[in-house]
Amino acid sequence: MTEPTMGPTTGPLSHRDLEDARELLRGHIVETPIQTSRWLTEAAGSPVVLKCENLQRTGSFKSRGAYVRIARLPEEERAKGVVAASAGNHAQGVALAAKMLGIPATVFMPEGAPIPKENATRGYGAEVVFEGQYVDQCLDAAQGYADRTGAVLIHPYDHVDIVAGQGTLGLELLEQVPDVRTVVVPLGGGGLLAGVALAVKQRRPDVRVVGVQAEGAAAYPASLEAGAPVALTQMKTMADGIAVGLPGTITFPIIRDHVDEIRTVSEDAISRALLALVERTKLVVEPAGAVGVAALLDEPSGFEGPVAIVLSGGNIDPLLLGKVIRHGLAAAGRYLPLAVTIPDAPGSLARMLGEIGAMGANVLEVVHARHSPKLHLDEVEVTLQLETRGAAHAARVRQRLYELGYAVV
Image 1 (cartoon, helix red, strand yellow):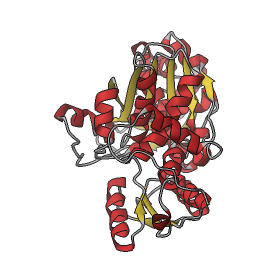
Image 2: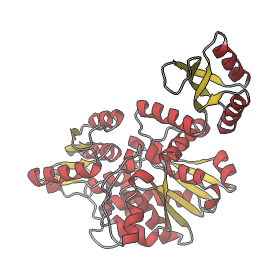
Image 3: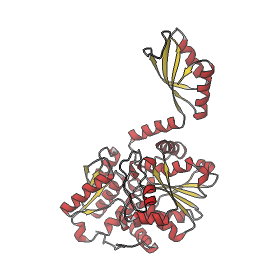
Image 4: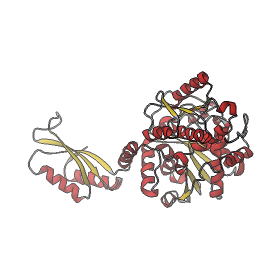
């Protein structure tokens, strides 16, 4: 069994602490690759690279912090096992680390957690218990379990060993991209951003560090404005990996003092980014892992290059992936829903569909509606779902139908 190695218990983390964590992880995690992105480089007008942590063991950066935290437990604590709360990525990191170190693990996951994340967590040998809708509720349940059983709570982000482990990603990144000027990192509870910011600022204080949250789960902007962690009353985002309603007491001051900017991105922006990553880089990335790319696509000129964007994870339910891709196609204007009023006469539908076909749009779905108080007796409303080549093409299709005299919604 691996002997525990001591890390810092309180106070700020030093560069030495991050190097010690990196040495502890050697041979247990993957040094994930950097991928140059030509299409993002063209959009930004300066070099953009992707740090592919979606290719990490268990599919996310969480393996780093989980292993460091558990490996440093003394023998008497290891004997009682560990417990964690997670939407899936931290769960897998804890489950794998516990298995590697021969320690029993229990993980509380929110109801509706992605099935692949649940299955992978069980596959690494952990017991899975479902509790509540959000990670915060799971944390309460996990803490209760720890109080009852003596198991050690492995917090998903708010512990110095977790932050040190996640910070090893920042050390790698600086070596892989020595001329980097801006580092963009997904932000939930803050363990990853805090660790990366410490690693970057301790070596390269001139490098700009930007955190990105989903608009529907953005606890940090209000907390930073208030000067202390402020809990969200509700959250709604597809990016379950960063849906954390309360910044950590350890991560908050690190982010406040070392991160240059926090940005937020919409659900549409996340889905467009995820779709683009699949199409342009051939990488499967979960919504939480794509928020950095979404932020750059929202404002391509807003980041000084070279820019390094962390793709924090790739664990996405195939069913959700299909939905997000369809949502991304719609957000990009490649799915065009229309309601068109046409004469209720033979050949009317064929003529309209012929015009649409001549414009190069593909008809995916056609539905007739004759019984509506807004229609005249000699009219029918046809609801169409079209596939187009993008927003500009969709606009041309709509304009052509207007020119032909159709009432289009």
